Length: 243
Image 1: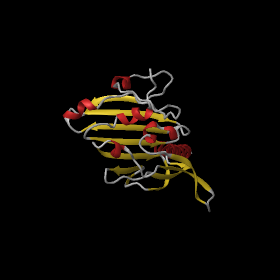
Image 2: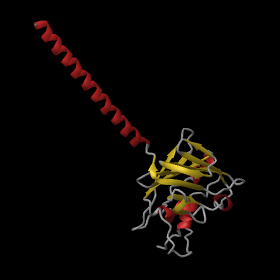
Image 3: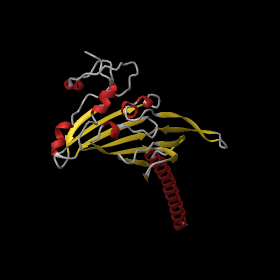
Image 4: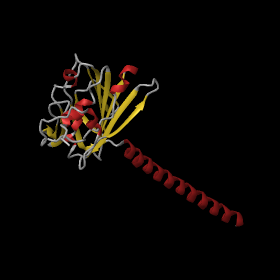
């Protein structure tokens, strides 16, 4: 079988008339979790929402060959990592296609979805604060999202990055707690940029576990002290009554 150019694999899923896509990225101490959801906007578009086999990593060793037989796009090759995929229907009976994959901190820069919709993605240490002599992590893409240019029927893209680390700066359109959101349309293409501190993770679950645990220990100590005091007072009172 001819090797399939991964650019075709990645962008073929966006060749959908009248569709909208939501790209979500979760960043935590474990790594990076990608989640891409593509929604049909009408019943007529349902047949165009298909769960093609989508390789997780770009492969710079592949040539420019591509296959015209669409059925091959559903087959998976050995020794290749693929996104987990699912195809479901929403409450209106419209198809919803989802891809997700977990990357570690080293291999995320090879994400197939990101690299094949932007000319490049940069993930590197960044000396944002020279006075503090601290290195932060910079994630950035150029202002060249290619989906709208290549596929006229792609209408709307939402990019959401949820970061458990402390974000120092970003160019997000809006922020909801620790989720940073960008809205892209044909008339509003933009770069993605975020700087965060990898040494000050803001893990909400660990935060609450830590402080609730400390509070519980403190409360338990107070209760024990009160019980001991009551017992001592009781014993002293009992002795006085005997006298």
